Image (tube, each protein chain N blue to C red):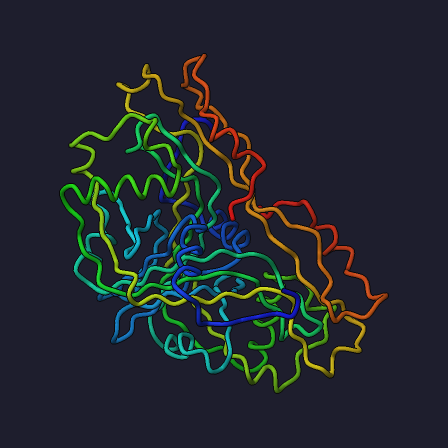
Amino acid sequence: MRRGTDRAVYDIDTMKAVLDAGLVAHVGISTDEGPVVLPMAYGRTDDTILLHGAAANALLKNATGTEVCVTVTIVDGLVIARAAFHNSMNYRSVVIRGLATKVEGDDKVEALQIITDHVVRNWDTGRPSTDAEIRKTLVVSVPLTEMSAKIRGGDPIDDDADLDGPHWSGTIPLDRVWGAPESAADLHEGIEVRTEIRALEGRSVN
Amino acid sequence: MRRGTDRAVYDIDTMKAVLDAGLVAHVGISTDEGPVVLPMAYGRTDDTILLHGAAANALLKNATGTEVCVTVTIVDGLVIARAAFHNSMNYRSVVIRGLATKVEGDDKVEALQIITDHVVRNWDTGRPSTDAEIRKTLVVSVPLTEMSAKIRGGDPIDDDADLDGPHWSGTIPLDRVWGAPESAADLHEGIEVRTEIRALEGRSVN
């Protein structure tokens, strides 16, 4: 893709791929004192996005049973046009609006696994959560029914009148790259990081 | 910093440094159909955060004169604890809540320069904006008066009972790295990218 594209209509698989590539969601609620937007870890199923936090988490508690907006954005680079007016960013963003519903019982345990797998993919090898830990966690789901995306890629789109001007035009890609795993200071000697986690080093988040 | 830290009280310079390191803000407004959160480019002055969009931008138009929430988050890595319950992320996040006010006249021209400089730092060498372009742009400011931060860094914080377990514990840093500038397909030969932009290649966004 060279000529810049900036569209707002995407099929659901494209939107799910953006959710899978994102790391945090920005979750918005309306309160009597105005809107609040906080970053949160998340996971997704085929038809919902799942959020979790401490049971005392004020935003999630207030969100439950109300309309929320969950937005996931990945910045892919800078778009530098000949004219400042056409400067932009290349990015992928998905916006989900809907009712946040508390997740309970077996669905809650499954939801926590999905969220953990989305973020760090080590649920299966860490020490499993206890019932008390699960009780201390609040999980809500929002349906993917009202979901939209905006994705921009490719070159700047300059005015024709500027094409023969003296200014450079192009893009600066921005990559998200995993570093080397760093063992905790209190880790006992002889415990190695999992192969899959070590293999992340130098790899990009796509 | 090794032992994990997760605090919520920071001095204003620390919070401004997070704003300076961020690339997009997630801007939330309350509407009759629930909250809306969208990513936007931004800039900051000593006492405001500045947002801009097309004059027809529905979110910004609705935001003007109302309470908004502007959140900037940088993910610095994954925190993998011995227990899934203590998994987390290292991140820096700033939340600003306040009244969005339209910026006009000379202040608007200055605001556009600040926003452009925050994002791509080429205002001075691109073709300057025309009056018509400036009219087509809406700029709003939100005071930094009601600003808070949450910053997590360092190791996982496991339960003492898990410290002698068999599970790995540590962090996976995530770096944001600039790639090589890519000239637009319609750029005439002989126009080189500015030295400062080429120098970004391989450098991290801090």
